[in-house]
Amino acid sequence: MGHASNVSTLTDYEQLLRSSDLRVTRPRVAVLSAVHEHPHADTDSIIGAVRQSLAEVSHQAVYDVLRALTAAGLVRRIQPSGSVARYESRVGDNHHHVICRSCGSIADVDCAVGDAPCLHASNDHGYAIDEAEVIYWGTCPNCSSNPHAHTH
Amino acid sequence: MGHASNVSTLTDYEQLLRSSDLRVTRPRVAVLSAVHEHPHADTDSIIGAVRQSLAEVSHQAVYDVLRALTAAGLVRRIQPSGSVARYESRVGDNHHHVICRSCGSIADVDCAVGDAPCLHASNDHGYAIDEAEVIYWGTCPNCSSNPHAHTH
DNA sequence: ACCTAGATCTTGATCCATTCAAGAAAATGG
DNA sequence: CCATTTTCTTGAATGGATCAAGATCTAGGT
Image (cartoon, rainbow over all chains, first blue to last red; front, side, top):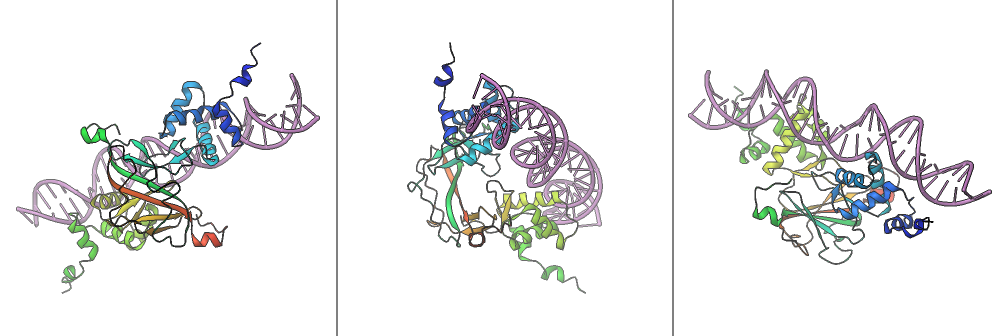
């Protein structure tokens, strides 16, 4: 009695992992979940979030998992100048980011030109370009109105 | 006899520094020169280049100078994902970069749309955008033809 | 269900780019 | 030439990320 829950509790995250041929482990489910729930979080924040549901996960495991998930395309890693690595679960749509120079907040920006665009450099120097990464730098609404309230 | 050379040897780099209200020191001239001569070089390469003309410069001095030059707008700092900081002397023209995923080589790309463009995000979320940084990722001609010759 | 092979995680150390700190040296303006 | 302020030297520390070895767990086959 009760072992039927093994089947009924298959989460979407487990499905995602399996469909990428990744073994399902508790650290992996927890990290994948954390990235979904905390877009643009850095590794340290992800470790913190993961440990709320799975207390004793090593930081090394989180690093390993993030690498595996990134390689599998389940998460995307971004690393703006001067920042540590950050991760997001929105993948495959070629979107970009706006970053506040003052507080570091990040927001998503749909690609301005279409779906898989931005791939046209004025002179590609013979490079075979497969991705155009755009980072818009500026000041967020909050920092614009409260110029001295740094959360950075 | 001979001290007239103090005047005649004012280099362009000295002028650049003075016009930015920066004191002229040998480390600064050497670093500025190194960045001009080695576009996209990282700090370590710049330290090496600087020490060819000025043997005993501390790495800390180079870090400090690079920071000062960047703040003054005399050089530009770029830091692609997974790379250390790199510097270039081409500033003020809103150009972008293509980077080879295989060997890490970097080439300049003029802005595709015009002069100070690219500043139009599809939805800026209220951010006041002042710069659009574009990095094109791909494979350089050399790595395309010699797929296994990593210099990275 | 159980076992095995191979992947993944834990533990603990290490790397290295960058920054911090304090005092010595140098540059500018008077 | 001096005084003030900046910049450089020296040496240590920081922190994100990686390396390494062995224990643990997952998945697939029996």
